[in-house]
Image 1 (tube, helix red, strand yellow):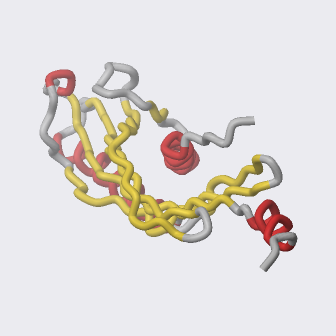
Image 2 (tube, helix red, strand yellow):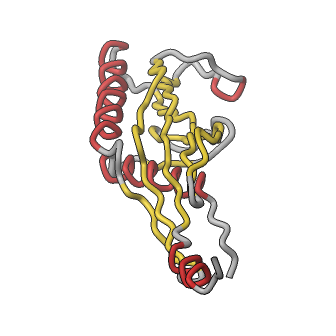
Length: 172
């Protein structure tokens, strides 16, 4: 069995699950650009992955970033109502992440070794109710909220049970 786990995908899946649970009627997609899918939906776009520090014995603290956008087509309300609806979503998303900033989100075992992944200091930054638009988003009736999502993840591979028996038989 391979020990590879796509941590980025696990993070995005957890984030999507948090959003879907709170906003039951809204879908979450993972597209590289805007697609005319639904009246309102979220999109998570993969950002960067960097090592903060290597830890001993085989652990790392890593930072993962994603861009999250909320798309909402304008209804026949006035602009103030449309903006209020969009801002409500933005405020609620920020609170959801604050409430889930240090969540355990995945554990698995490979060859008797357990690996646990934990959110640490998950935050939304750069909350922007009027982000720059690419060509696919350049639609007059489309409201967009944009966030940068950042989370540190402690990734550990518990080799204790594999290493200790070997060391106990080593001559000093």
